Every structure is written in C-alpha cells, then in structure tokens.
Image 1 (cartoon, one colour):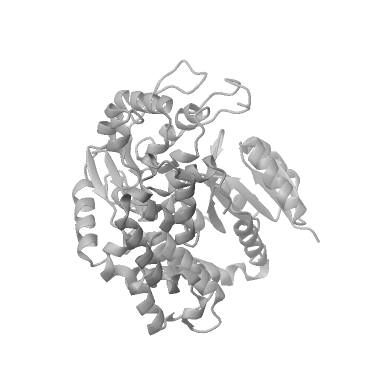
Image 2: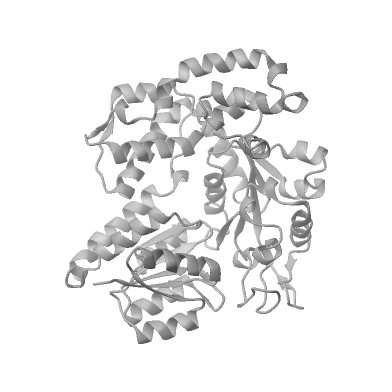
Length: 462
C-alpha cells in the first residue's frame, strides 16, 4: 500500500522538487500551489499526510491545519516554513500538527519526520494518545528554546542584563558575534520579553536571498507583476507587522537591497511589487552579523545610515569558550534536546567526556556543541556518552592549539590581504588545521565566509 501525500507550497519549483523526491521514495504524491487548490484536492481524495508551507497567498498554514483536521482528523500535518517561530510551532502542535520543520528542507530529516508521522497514524488509539501527545508537546516546548538556558558565567549574566534592559523598548538592536554563538536565540529572547511577544516573530536569513528576489521577499508582490509571479505573495515586512523582524547575517545584503531596506525602515511603509498602494508597517527590527560592519562601512560595502538605523543598541554574543561555567549546562540542554529528537534516553556524559568538553575550545560555539552531542547520542549504545563517540578533533586540540600559536606569532606570513602567494598561504593553513575550515580561518585571522570565498576563488580542492 502506498501512502498518499499532498504537498502545498506557492514556490512552484520547490513544490515540484519535493513532489519528485517523495515519489521516488515510494509515496503517491500530489501538489497544490494555493489553499483553494489544496481544498479541492482534499475534498476529492483521501490523503494520509499533508506537507504545507506556513504562509500561502490566500491563507496561512494554521488555517489549512484547522480545515484539514475539521475535514478528517486522521490526516497527519507537517508545517514547513522559511523562518523559525517556536511559538507558532507549539501552537500548531496544540492544534493537531504532527511536527514543524524549517526551510531549507533537509531530505533525510523530512523523510524521517514523514515516516514518524505515518507510524503514529493509528486511529483506534487516538483518544488514548491524546494525553501522551499533550505531554510530548509540553516537553518539546520546554527544551526547544535555547533562550531558557541563561547560564551562570559572568559573560552570560552580562548578556542577559542587556537583554532585560532593551527588550521592553522599541529600540533597534544589532547582535554581534561569531558564527554559532546563538545570535538568533538572543533575538528571540528580546522578542519574548518585549511588548510585542504575542505578535509575529519573523526571522530572515539575509545571506540566502538573491538580490533579484529581495524586493519580493521583503515587500511581497502581486500576481503577474513579473515572470514567475503566479500568485500574490506577502513579504517579510507585512508578515511581521505588529511584531519583530529579525535580519540574520545582515552584512550579506547587497548594496542595492540595503537602499530598499533603509527606505522601508525610515518611512515604515512598503509597496509590494506591482501594487500602487503603500502599506503601513509597525515592526521592531533586530539584526545580527558575524562580520565587522564598521569596517564594511569604512570600505563602502555597507551603508553608514543603515548601520546607524540598525545599531541603536548593540549586544555582543559571547563565544562559548568565554562562558566556561556554562559549558556543562549547555551540554545538558543539548543532551535532553537530542534525546527527544532521536527518541533515546541517554542519562548523562561520562566524567572523562565532561573533562574533554571543558578543555576543548569550541571554535564552532553552541552550534558545534549541538551537532557534536546529537551525533554522540545517535551513536551511543550505552546510557552514558563515552569519549569513543566524540569526533576526532577533540583529541587533537592540544597539538592544533600549539600550531596555531606558532602561526599567529608569524603574523606577516599569514596576512592574507598583503600576501604575494595567497593561495599557498590558505592551503598551508588548511593543512595545519587538518582541513577544519573554522580553525583555518582562525589561523589566518579572517572569518569563515571570507575563507569560503577564497577557497572558491582559487578552486582549492579539499
């Protein structure tokens, strides 16, 4: 028997791609590009599962969820979204959604979630499962948000003091910090503690928006306004109206898009592409970057007026190595989160692993810790995480740190922008770091994005 799945998304190419992928995996898959189209299909066919985008031109994912559950409560629903909103996720689960996944979609993750949803589709146990599901929702709510782990180190206490001070205001905030330091969790904490907490929180990855589509993504468009605009689209500004708009990696915006963004922030009005009508928007803006925006301003890569508009108040996200007293606290949080995600019951870390964690410098910060622990939980067959399931780099840190110090002492040798043989310099640093790009970037004194660009420029094979 083939399970029947309906994919609903107004992004035609994404919808077609997902349909093709699921069909190849053995599912009988249909697609719809709007709620009205999906409504007709759901009335005509019996679907086992629906994958739907949260935002559609003629309604939103929550209303679709309510319609589906009213039509047939046994249809499993998974919501997809291009931005992260924990509050919406929990509300959707309370209304009956099985799960909530973020774009870009990971093929293995979505397949795993679909299989889990279909496994849980047992009609005769619905009533008995209700309290279990409610308990599961509450558990997920408790451990899905990193902002609940405040930490007790001096750096953490100072960070949350700033959050407490600025959150109740409408001041624009710029969150600065290295990759993986939890900048979005800081932004979401500010939103949660603000007067806008009950309103939308829209997170936008500025690095993932092509400049040709930026106006449409930020301000929306009308059907037929350009080639490929087959439906009306609500932009991020309108979706966030009344709430908070989080601009992640804002330094990646092209200069042309910066001009458009500045105008919208100054006038608090937007005009969708193809429309002659302006829409008033009331939003609070929080931006984040791992780049030196002041340097970008000096070099003419980032508009100074936009920088000051975004940076009414700045918060520095501390590196994990600066929060030593919190390392085991965060590790415990990620262990619990991984147990839920992977349906396992690992109790704790061995004393040896705890010691390794405390000695490690965590160049990838919280993101690296989350990935390391999730991998360890997946590989563990015992009740405690042992060192055998940790990645190899945990056992090479001392020699690598020694090499790094030697290299940093010879600063001229690794000063990229004045080097006569930049390509060889990059290759040497990568070899010294055993091709760990994060550590290689640290050795070179640049950020990872710059290193990636240089690797691509010189076509360096890793």
